[in-house]
Image (tube, rainbow, N blue to C red; front, side, top):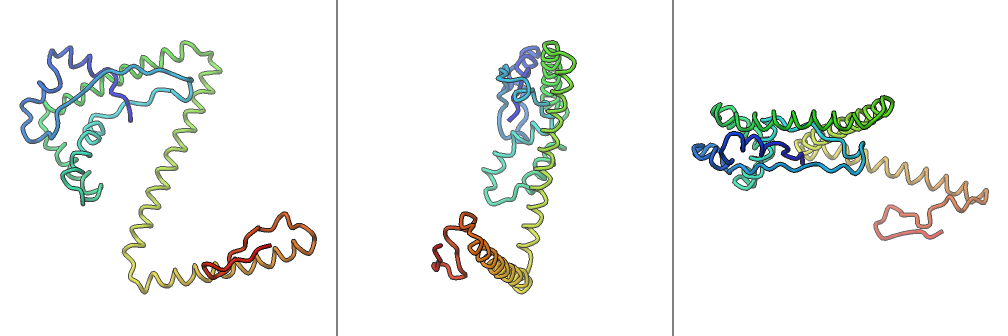
Length: 214
């Protein structure tokens, strides 16, 4: 979770605490604010490179999501996110400004921290660092994309009828039988040429409890 860096200084400059600023929010906001500045400590430049700060809406969403979950334990995350988005759209500008000011403060702290790190590195080190960070970000995006795809596939599977699922179940069973037969044939060939080290110690048959020891 990203650190709420620099927010405390914003609230102090306004002369009010987060709770005071939200005193007039009424039922729109379901929790009081608790912002605090927490300095980052770097164990290594690459692994502890500062993350970009949360946008005002994302910050609001992360704050509200557990509250909405507690109030609607059976609701899906997608439904809760839609409700949070609606709440954000209805939020007065004066209340949104709290999150926007926090984001601007965090962004300024982020830029200053980046500059401080770069001042300690040579140009070649900066290039290598930026490449490594880019690779990590691309890897993370690919992982998120994969999870979204798997989630979509899972939802599609749930929506299939029993008869539709049975087609795929039968194909999977046929594939297991094919794999078992091909593996057994290959292992027999390995035994003939004296490569017992390549053979599985326990070969599982189609039965759940039947095994064949080699």
